[in-house]
Amino acid sequence: MQEKIKQFKNEIKEKIENVGSGDMLESLRIEYVGKKGKITETLRQIGSLPIEERKTVGKELNILKKNFEEALKDKKAELSVTTKKPATDFDYTLPGLSKRIGHLHPITQTIQEISAIFVRLGFEVVAGREIETEKYNFTALNIPLDHSSRDAFDTYYTNDGNLLRSQTSTVQVRIMESRKPPLSIIAPGKVYRPDTVDANHSFMFHQIEGLMVDRSISFSDLKGILHLFLKEYFGAQSKMRFRPHFFPFTEPSVEVDVSCFKCKGKGCSTCSHQGWLEVLGAGSVDPHVFEAAGYTAHKYQGLAFGLGIERMCMLKNGIHDIRLFFENNLKFLNQF
Image 1 (cartoon, rainbow, N blue to C red):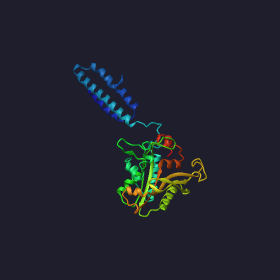
Image 2: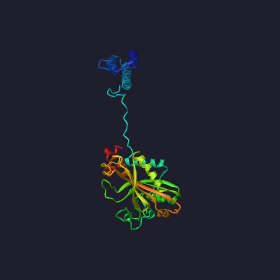
Image 3: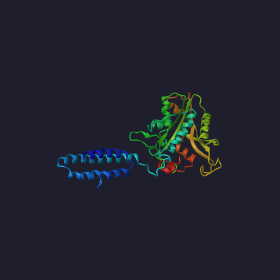
Image 4: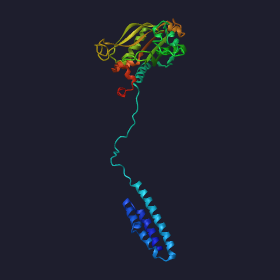
């Protein structure tokens, strides 16, 4: 009986090493521990052995059976790893799945596009605070106490007497206080005015204000800079015209129109059939603004201009409602 047990051990070791599939493993299991398996039949024969051998042979056979079953389990785990096949419906030639990523808001794109043009013209981009004092938002810009824009109905005032800036010209004043000419800066950013929200107005919008100061700055410099900017932004065929206007912080002051880029000046719905589009305000810096900033008025000259970012983007892209910029409508935003 001892020789038979030794023979089983050698056979099992060799056969398990040569097993290459689940079917072969199952056949081997049946061969040794099935109902009529070799180990099973041998266990049944223990009763015919002499009493002194039964205990020893029975113990060795049970150990052999246990080891054999564990070896089968390990081999099964090994086969499940080495023989696992990829799903037949997976195409390795397909491109990988990529995550959707966002892109810049059209307002941000417009700010960057306009800023890049002025940077090429020698301007520096600067930023400033959005909560301002009356001094920088009004007084230093030559806006008197009785001006309508200083009324509580036209400006967002805070409880401590400050306000949300209504124009980014406040940045220009602060820069002039901290630097000496020559200066060439643009100041993009948010501004706030308590306007009723409609297709053309919002209580918060974006501006870019520009300022150039030196000893000999003329109105022709202003015309040349704006001419180059508008042609770059709206197209080489664009024409420009000045119309007299009034701003407290510039004198003389003008409104600037550009020929309609849609109809080439012939008249269409975009330009209200006028052939021209109003795009910005500009002028020569008023001497009172220089004096408020600590500059000697007769020593320096300057030019200033300001434009609305939303309006520039709306005109260029044929957008007819400013509210679309702030509604988070992806069908609209994904066009840009």
